[in-house]
Image (cartoon, rainbow, N blue to C red; front, side, top):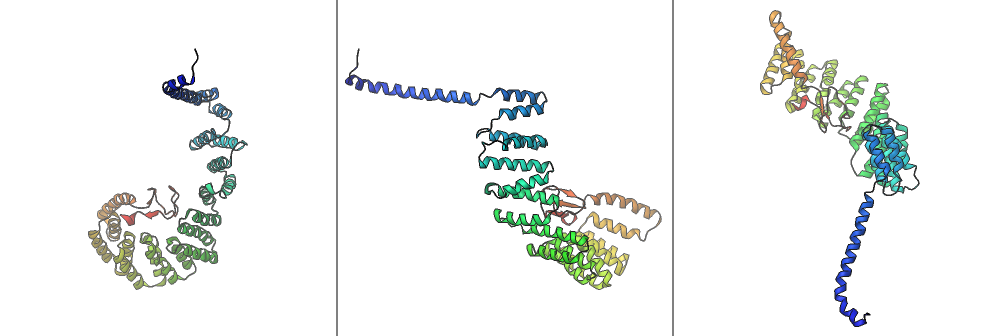
Length: 392
């Protein structure tokens, strides 16, 4: 039986839904086949996983590397595997994976630069700073990775104390990121100034301090270094002025220079100037370090009884363990016998409590320490460590 044109026209409305349904079914069948193919892991993967489970990581990694034929679909797997090993502290394995990846000629520019960035981080974690530096310098010229590469270079230069290089890289990073990093640059100049100061090269110290102020006029560290330099040169009035500038920059650090200022006034024989400075400054801020320093000034000028009266009045307004400790120390000068023994016992108790409120803390990550760090050992940020007792 044959169909003519009229018959085909009559059947067309019936055949059209069937054709559509057949096309949909064929497409779905093909999609299922694709999904099955995508989940068809090679035997090498299974063997690699078994080796990992049997605690044979060296053989497992060799199996994974052979299994991963590098193409546009497996590069990310390589990178993820290498990054995993680095985070686990298995840096040698991470290096091998990333080196194997870079050696493949099928990588495009973006994939290669990403792999180089990972390899540079491997080298840094392994302490191979020269190799890491060379890779990051190369990547710093690639737009997509320049900011991250420059940050990694900064870590290297800080570790190696190459402050001139750190300054140059920070200036470039500031231009690329659009961030103001002048406070960090000032700290790098202070590192150079400190190195020169320790060698008693005051000309170089002066130059580096001037550059630090040019980068950040509110740099407390630069003022402290400047005062220390003047004091070493015997220019005590200028030293006092430099240290006093800390009050205008960041009052939290005023306690760091209170002892220096008091000593300089005493060396100059200016007892009245010493008394007037601490009295007026204490009235402005009321910091614990200033109050303790002023108690010493009152004792030297007016005697122990006057110092005790000042401390008692201060404790009534602001109770704290530091003032109580100072009061005990003043009383120990005059008492004897069993009363002295009792005070010594109390002094020991107070000192244990006082130790909990001394030191420094990072306002960013909460790191705590007993000495002042200009860069936080916890989060590696500059200018975030503050004296604890000033914030009580």
